Length: 206
Figure 1 (spheres, one colour):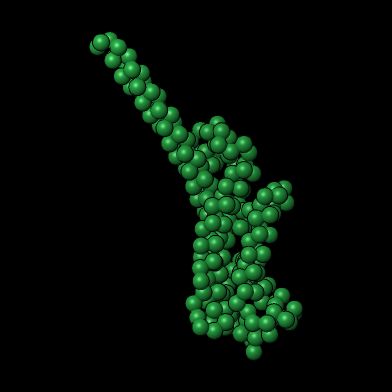
Figure 2: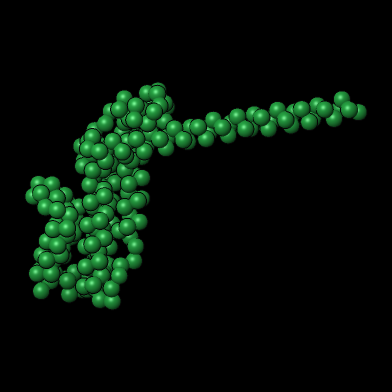
């Protein structure tokens, strides 16, 4: 009787050990993937516009083969980076705007975008380097621009949206491209860039 009971118990223990081993490998794999993506983000944040697989592997503390085991090529890693940043930035951009009037909401939108664009600037510039050969990055950029425009149009009254030149001017002023130009090429501080955008917007509306 005892021998009959031991076999099932032994088999159960073996199954548990095997399951724990699989769970352990899965956890290590997930940890490695997260470290690789984090390393990519950190390198880009530090100013490396096009980090190579070797740089990512070294920064993440993993082997080069591990990088390519999780990502077939560097483009797929940029896709992961883009998706992670898009999700984080949209949390800021998509939150309900403060204000009773549409003008107050527009002012809050300008402030929100200044914060979001400043944070995403290194990643957007890095993605721009690769967009010409990555349909995914190009689609992501177009989707982000379209989403930002949709949020803008949603708070504007018909008196504004019915004027194409005014609407297009506002969309341009509140775009990432304008923010990047003011901060980088024109070398304005974030505070000055935001104030300038708000000043021009108000003058257009007045």
